[in-house]
Figure 1 (cartoon, chains in turn cyan, red):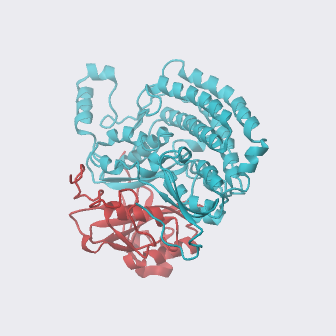
Figure 2 (figure 1 turned 45 degrees about the horizontal axis):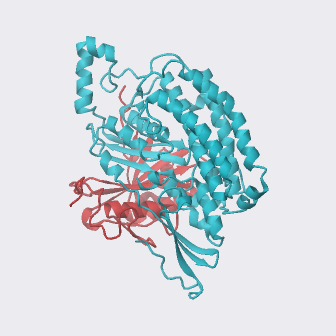
Figure 3 (figure 1 turned 60 degrees about the horizontal axis):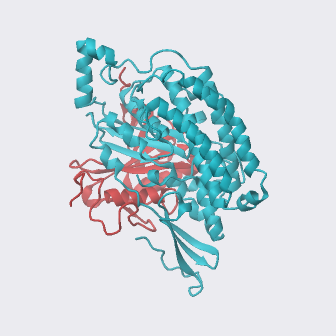
Length: 399
Length: 163
């Protein structure tokens, strides 16, 4: 197991090594931190990961491309739609096809709903770590509503498996868009509730302002991305700066803060609630009509009705299910803005129906690299606040 | 509609950013170039990779090291292709650098001492592929247990392991 090397600068007989995790509840998964402490203050920190390593990248090499979608769900279990988005976009770029407008807008709608639900888990658990119990209950009330929407849409609450290479699996059921509209119209008032509980709360401010600060240069040098980078003052959002899936047609603001502390990361994400909700509303208002899958019979499974009446469709169905579809040789790196930052899929194809190599650039892994920088020289209690503020998901770090 | 045909060769891509700047100052470092599906890939000589990254980072505004990973082309040689993804926020531009190393001599200079973002990525490549990053301050396994035998993402490593 990992260990801290001897530190000649430390006063050896005064410091001690403290293990935090992997079962510590505030580490949000199975993260183990090895701390060298002098009393209450942290001198050095070393994260130890790998407890959830399941070899997903290796598994990919033995699966057809279409089987990679449920696998992608299982990495970042708080944001499966973003994983699906990254994976299907990468495969679509390898194939040279594009999903039709309706599918693209549905994808944006679901991505933003997912961002809200992921941030809700972050806010609830982060506040809980800091000692604000009731926020957790409010957040999970709204998250439950979103998960019910996902269940009505895809049959699953979390591992939705709803995107397909070339489009979507199904049309949303009747009345589903109206349910989303109802949720989106009430959600801003719910964000006000969370802000009432936290933003003006002097205890919460004491615990977060000036805590676990990281400068823009350090954040960039360590590879941080997403809200954690924007809270240090770097104005970069892939949805705006490298748009995919019709994001260029949406109007939204990218919240940025400059102080780089736990408070700034809180402010950025709370503002993202409102921006994401506004994007959900825009997606609902402007949802185009039309097909939900690309016109690519060798890649997209045929309609059930056609399959039962047309010979061609039946053959394609049989071929796709039993042999997959061949993807032209090449390599792509497709990045999407997940709730945690730049989620990249690097896929190499050798021209067969199974990927030669799939690598996932997990934003949480890079964001975790910033944690020692944030915590060294601070109190143990601040470590808990700092872990919550970078919003890591261990399923994605370890894969 | 199939994707546009790739463009291969340094000469054909001479004008494309940031290859033009690299050619002007570090010509000897570049062994090949390819533009495919809107992505530029440069093949870099192994000894020059740290220098090229430093140049791109400090002189060409590629301030964000998005990713370091590897592909194993066993039984072809050179077997390992170590892949670096750099992103420039200011120029909204990405570039992929590739270093090819042989299986018998799987070593690459580490970026970590000058660019800390590479730390966990390089450790992961070392852990799962067995490529050594020379000069890395803490090159230990990161995902697999310390006493694990073999490197699971190599193509000659069975999916279900040796046991």
